[in-house]
Image 1 (tube, one colour):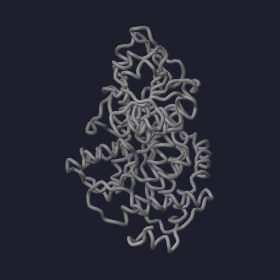
Image 2 (image 1 turned 180 degrees about the horizontal axis):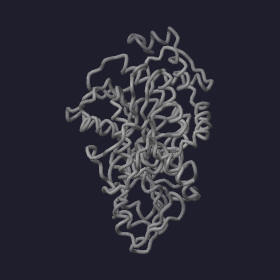
Image 3 (image 1 turned 45 degrees about the vertical axis):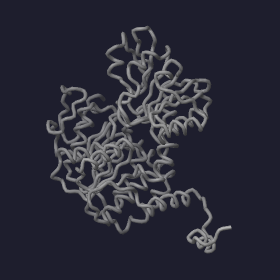
Image 4 (image 1 turned 90 degrees about the horizontal axis):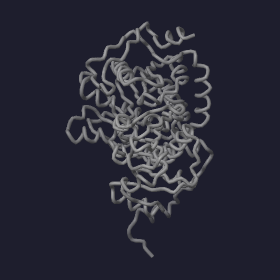
Length: 449
């Protein structure tokens, strides 16, 4: 059985070698991969389970299915190759199938080493999508897989976190692209810095900044799935706990809201005065992280920044404190210092590691400090990803139909509204329309009282 599992991991007859590089080695130039492979997944025999997963997701993603049906005959992406780095979940599987139905050839890899659902990867690979992803990739394997999809010489990019975009600006400068999209806040922040430096090579649409993305995916999706990840890895009671949410952007708002709804006392820490004031008026306590450290039972980071919970803060936490991260990269909690300064480390259960500090306090880290909602759970519900991935599909189509100069763009307002209307229609909700009288009133300036 073990031999068969290894064979499934070695599609294309590539020999898997031990990772002798630094855990954080990120050199694109030194990676060596086989171009003969068409996919590489954990176990292709998981495809049946993946098919059931996709069927469930498709039943809860009516907007994206409506887009698929709209373009399945015209195939506007025919002859185009897309390279995508996304969390390989059942929801991403629905997007992958939609892009394939629209005519695209898709090369897909994970945007996080811990976020792949192996059965979904298997079913997509069996359907002719070039998938290079499995749960629990090493850092080297993660970057190997990113390189695999870029070596397909894509025409379009779909990214979540910015790693593909950055590689295309640093190493793969010879690849000519129609454009790309970016899914998440962390990636958009990197692209804004790239744009500010005047280095952007091709147009990129910030799907993250669409109303039908951040208002729902970031807030309701991450809020619910973060709690899901915490509960799956610990099964602790939330009611009565003190939850500290680090960052009050749309992700932080959603997490704080869900903690409060489950009966937790919520503290918010922020560096932005406007968001801090908003958190206060939303009913939460606001204070510096150093002051919150000895008070919190559960800490969740949601900033997109580095070491927002440093070791100096961890050392102030109470015995039994739980640490989790909901930012895209595993840099928000100072995990390296936690490992280096702890007297012992013990795995309690899957995705739950116990660190004993020098002061004898035990600190519990979830999902190795990676995205807790995808590392320890399944990520966002299908209903909310329906909105985000509908924006992805329509934004890719917009890039194909409109030649744009290199820049960072917001999702077109018409696309954003179309996604909202498709979603409402798909769940059987109708809304009012503006009358001619109301239209005249809103567009004029003479009528007042």
